[in-house]
Image (tube, rainbow, N blue to C red; front, side):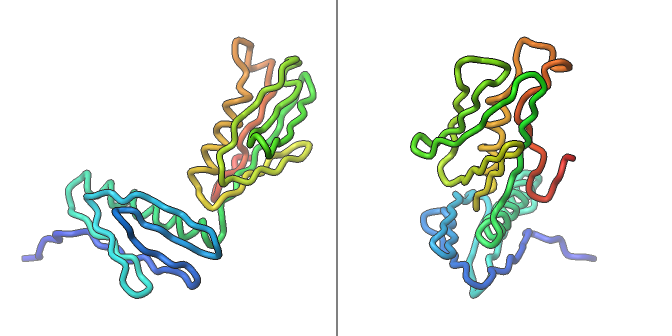
Length: 184
């Protein structure tokens, strides 16, 4: 009779140059002056041994979900420190030419002449995210996938057309590339 598995267990290799430690239910990863932190869930046990991160959890439905989520977060932290994450947005104009610039002092993206509006649209950027603009594209880079994704979503949402026919007014800034996915 086969023995039932009582725990889920996964080992994640820590790449060369990344230091990992746990303080007060927070996992901290550092590499070349960059640092990422993530609060650990109490239902998942995380242990650091030699050059491996060991994740253990029970086998109930909820524990499996939390186990998979924590595993993905830790892998994203490692990937972010090694490679970083990049989002690409496209500036689409049909009626009025849009000018986009970054105000580094106020940490915001300024969209001028959106749909012919006299007032500039100002979109707050998230600290720890680098934004580069060109005439047609905006590139967002960060070591934290959540910050980069949220910044891209804020920019897309900040240029959403409201109370007009979307089939005619197709102006805006749209996400065209995410990490590991292209939309065009």
